[in-house]
Image (cartoon, rainbow, N blue to C red; front, top):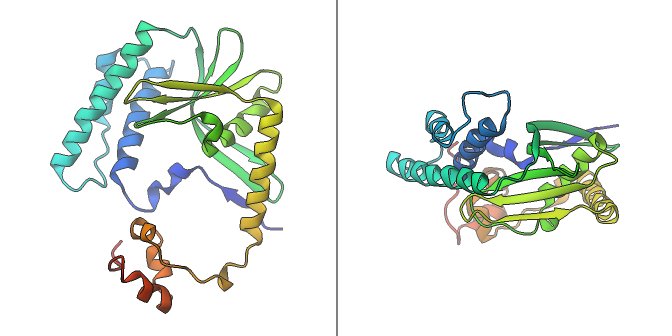
Length: 241
């Protein structure tokens, strides 16, 4: 039996450098150090900003100027996030940061790295993810549903929340993952996974679309003659890595 790994989207960082990957990872790394109780070097706003600057990732930006503008924006986000946290402390305890988890799903393994797991004052578990832009309801976020499935075995008797925080607007949206809802999500995830595993990919011809322009795997589809010809209306295929 083959065992497949459905991996967290952030591991696609290794496919091709993009500015939004660099920006997001830089912010997450700085906030990870701030919330890590074992990291005594980052406990203040100034130290968090310094951590961001010292570990800034510039891969994927078109120019040093673009990277510098993004760094300046990142400083504002980190400062604003910590300021809001100090103005309205949650009283929660951070249990883990950047926690790698796996869950055996039978024919495949669900894997993910969770940015932060807190325990609220009432004992409930809060799975927290940061976004540099706008946020949606966590119930509609596939990654957050996967994180809830991964965390549930660690705390089987505690309520589990998933929370998204916008570092840009300081908005925070949190939702309780009720057992029936999470069971429904797991059922849909298993169905999708089996469809992916059982699909006969060699018989599927790729179809050129406008969204293909920014796809990391465009070069693969471009080896199909009809695809390359159809894609010409959207642009040229670059074979550079």
